[in-house]
Length: 456
Image (cartoon, rainbow, N blue to C red):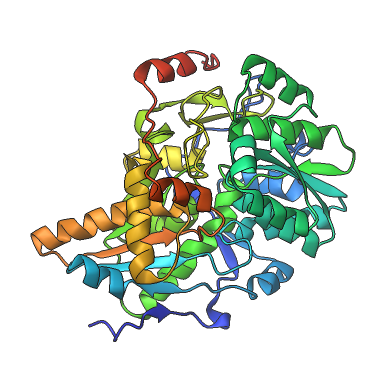
């Protein structure tokens, strides 16, 4: 029988994980190797090292080591905001009149407002250990850029951020937080890189995409001595660092004898989802337990539900390695009306492989219904959720209402990746009735997918 469950389940400091978990070690079907676009052969650590920090390149390519020790300096930094709480959403349950038990892992209790800091501090640490001057990166809604600017400030590293232009314009306060921590922030695509100029010429007036910003950040890193590129999602190394979310979630559930029935996470590039589900998927892969896992993505950028599982460039400028993933095509440009930060054309190779193997499922949702769920949640749970997180909230509410119809008392767990206090332009559009549900046509997707690279 379960113990009496408090509103917030906290782990003690000594219960915080001391190791990251690499789910690839337990995957029978490993994610397909990253390919060098020039040779179409699997990339090596040596080939990745001019772009990534050496230790991060090793983590990226390691699919056999199950556990990586978290360096003490990173664990000490984590202690400022971790372990993060697992919250029982009693008020939401009451409002929905559902027999379901709803839990959310809250990752917004740090200045960056999101889970992104978990990997940002790790990547900044390895850059500092290597003796680098600084790092470059991209950011969509600005959460990753904010987190990285904080991490770089902590380790006295220069931080150069290419921010998707539409977010740069819509989220000025997120931009100013980055600048407060010392980051240089440039709207992307810009005219400061050769790739940026090319994209602006090919797509006049474009509001940008994560694929564009990645291309610019990589060019900036490889053209400046003492700099490396770091990424906030998609990469396997990032999902490794974010596994601390799922490890803490599972530890908190186990502490009170709770078995999750359904685990839900928003899906853009895969960092939050992959981090949340990793230890649970590991149990499934080892035959120790079974869960229903749902990836929730925006209908305006539906890589899993409408994309193609194929090798594609990770960036619009086609300078990065090729990754086999669910993709809409590296040239896909999300609508400027897309309110969240889930603007990436592809998906983590790990998440893609798990989805293709049928271990996880995926759903796409429209943004007006997402913001309706966000509003419902904010009114009763006292947190204004990030638009990204609200995709998971939408499906959690839908599933709780199904339980109301069937009488099932499911344990539903979702990831609340961060807060939405810097996303008020999007909330204003929703409140004013100006938000629309843009869904790309089949013809648009076919046009974008027709340009996938030819890989045998």
